[in-house]
Amino acid sequence: MSISRALRPGILRITTAPVRRLMLAAAFAVLGTSVLDAQTAPPRRVFPVPVLGYAPETSLLFGVAMVGVASADSAGPPTRPSTALLTAVYTLKRQYQLELTLDRWTTGDLWHVTGYAGMERFPSEFHGLGAQATDSSEIYTPQRFTLSAGAQRRVMRHVYVGAGYWFRRSRMVETEGGGRLTPGTIPGSRGGTDAILTMNGVWDTRDALYRTRRGGYLSLAYGVAGRALGSDDSYRRYTADARAYRGVGDVVIAAQAIMDATKGTVPFDLLPHLGGSGILRGFEVPRFTDGAMGAAQLEVRAPLKSFVSVVVFGGAGATAPSLRTIPDARLNVAGGLGHRLLLDRKEGLQLRLDYAFAKGGGGFYVEAGDAF
Image (tube, rainbow, N blue to C red; front, side, top):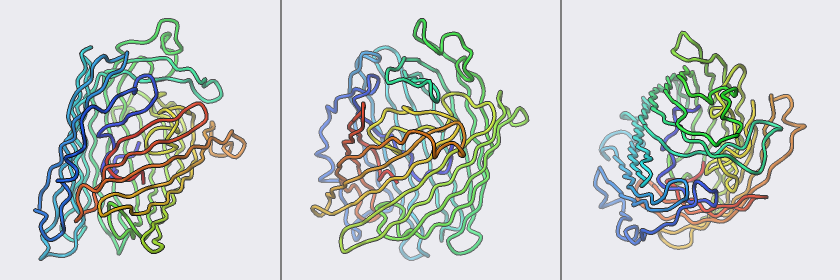
């Protein structure tokens, strides 16, 4: 579980999955007046995004997402922007999601500090684990309270090291009668307490945090969960995330390779997985779940107008009980097309609209920022 993402995506996601079958009812005309020139941008900006939709499991859903961006003083040393994301969603079935994500860079990018707090009671989908996963899913509703905090310090040019702590209390509110989660034999299917301490290192030469045009990024992390940290379960987690960006004229080619592996007793909803808005768009999240995951994806991003870009993307990945068995696992492929609408010209913050295709899947996504 990564706790150091620069800006947690999730302003609004629209997919064809049963739980996420939402209809965008609020126009994005505000974007045209929100794009700010670098010369006139105030040091702090806030972008509201309304959320409105419907699904059988939720009834009418409504809420708002607020994206805040704070730029550094131009007279000081170069510093990446700090961001905040507040999302509040409520449904007529008394379900809710409330999340606050903070991402802070100190002067000269010496320290990178992150924080997250969230509460939710919201339906999710379960397809099964490993080779027992099926195309059909069952709906379950958890109630969760989550907190996390992390800090990284620059120790040399482009290199950061740090640590973080992630904590979650959850209980299972509802499962489908006769479903695989109902007996409570799958780890995490009855809820409980999860806590993990993560140590990480990052090498980062990207020219910009958002709307990256060139550079590279490599993150390595090791996490441990156990009773001494407050967790009901004990396990280890190993993650690696490598990215590369290259500009060819006005076009940017972006590539990512990612690995996530666990060892021990891991709650089913924290296992490595594929699907969703970040890795293998087009598949539901989490469509494929197991003890380990490996994936790679590529994007070609080309400007269309001053604040609109078009994107072509594709990816492939697999899940397996361990990293050693991933080469023998079935490869899953997805891809699609999208647009990027520039919210803030100075910092490059964008709204992402993607449609992805996948075997047995497909979906429309609206998110903050690029997928990677």
